Length: 525
Ligand code: G4P
Image 1 (cartoon, rainbow, N blue to C red):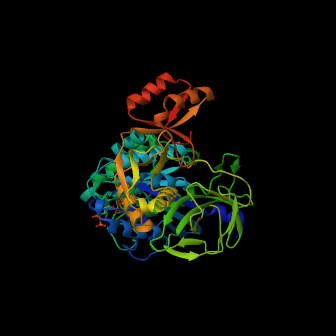
Image 2: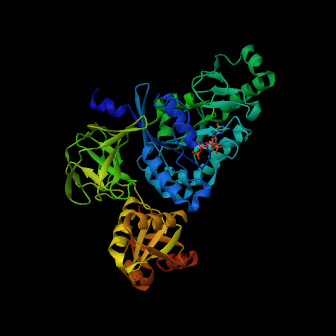
Image 3: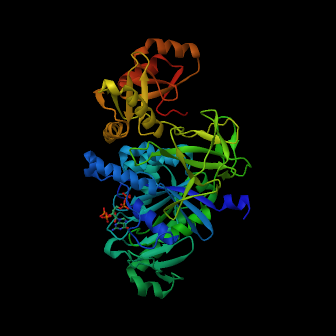
């Protein structure tokens, strides 16, 4: 197969959801369809259970699982599918955002009883920012849930995206009878099967009597009415609208029962984008360029505390990645060669000789990489679209063991490279501030510093509202601001200026007094 064909047949995407909506179950069923696994239960959930807040063994166990499930590659009808796993726990939302930077499209799973939930809304904001094409899967139709039209309205309103239903449910809960495939114009009658893939009974013509006989006259009448309304209200699928991130195709089903998934998967392989061109600060990079480029979107520390090595996950953006070949690490300005690059097929890790745009390669790393780093064949490129977001919680980190200050500094540095949390160094007093999305991360950092680096830390409270990256029209105004707010100025890991606002009020004051400055809650604008 030629280089261009290899690119065209790749689909790299992430499945996201609010915890418990069914992301893990759906992932597993997709792998079943792809023949990558043969029984349900093979993919372990990597979610950290709510009770596990202080159960570190559980966190460690989960970290192990999430290495294995970081990327799940499989073949389906000639298409190479790469599913990128995203952490479900909301305290790790930042990790999820970063994984999204490596996805060419996204499937959002929504619990049809609960509708759009908080985490889904936040994830969608990130997709919208990047104009990522989105497909919605309404899950758990076997349970009593919201009306299907209400669900569509809610998605439009809450996720601020147009919708086009491509399948449609007949009832829900114990009245759930089946799914009409609008895309293919046939009907699948519901039969529950958790373990394997079943073929539902198909009915071709829904105008005929067979439908009434199968699902009852009332349900049949309702389906015909619904479909008429759908045709009037919702536009048919226009791929361009989907690819531009303006309209989301919507499917209904039950992941647990393997129902409604094939419809989505078939449509997905047909419409989802193959690897897209990517922006760098210097120029656009196209997947079919001859030379290899890629960027690191995730770093995973290995489980063995005696070896501080890590796996850096690289998304191939252009060209062919080859084993044992010299590549240029733009951040370090040096050349590196990788003898054991790994890929993940059918949830098994194996050493590979080559990889194509869209693929994810795991590189053994002894501390060379941080999130966002670029590899090329020599060109100095910096990929865009891997922003940091303002953390929600902040604490000073202090050394609790003066004999171990070097270990602590190294540990903090490496954990921040991994993207566990963000480090800000206050320029006024030189103190280190750690910012996180959730409280759990502070515990993870403390635990890992101790167990992997032998360093002890202490947290001290600091009252902060947000970290803001500053955009200035006028350099003099920025200098004036930095002088006046010296106490609140910090540098992030990349050496960028960050204003640490104590409160919303203080931020508003700053915005009022410095009209030429714009304060952003993300590092890219
Ligand atoms: P997540 O990764 O999004 O957090 O969700 P996950 O797939 O773990 O699913 C959350 C719960 O919802 C699981 O039950 C799962 O079995 C259930 N579930 C997923 N899809 C469906 C569906 O279509 N119908 C029904 N009725 N339930 C579904 P659990 O009891 O929390 O976990 P488990 O003990 O079954 O693993």
